[in-house]
Image (cartoon, rainbow, N blue to C red; front, side):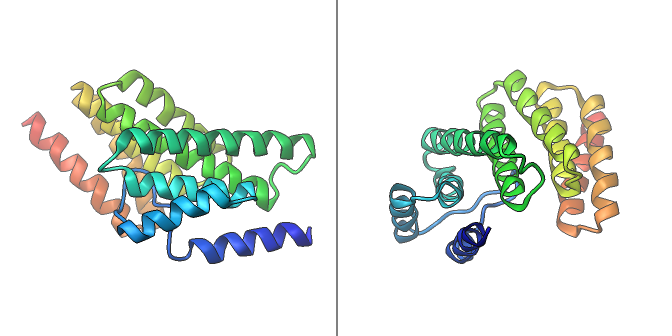
Length: 200
């Protein structure tokens, strides 16, 4: 148990300056920061450090190298899935480390889905976003639920199903309102404004 806390604290210290961003948002890193993330990804001995580094590095490469970002997110997804399975076998489901990997898995899935949607693979994107939504609902992650709904609404918008997109965005709006999250509210209200403008 003591070693697990050391790992978690170590991970938190490393990633204070390299946060994993919410689904659907992204940032850019300086070349030096990207080099640091690459070094950490290669040298990380603990899976909890490696998975977070891979997701952050993918985030940093998202705009300029989406294929590389996708590979990094798939690698992070595999690491998270492996550790979730191991922790379930050890009857650690619901414990801190399990929840950490669960959150990393949800982030990886949603990031992959964003790229799939951008590439026009809306069926795959929808499947992944719905998987992420179920995961968030399973642990009552309200912010994750709201963001997943927003992402699903975006897929329907991209498909041209404005009525379904509006319905899903309204569900997202309700959760953001419950949370009092102004940034989430602004995003979904912007999406709804587009829907209403499109409908005339």
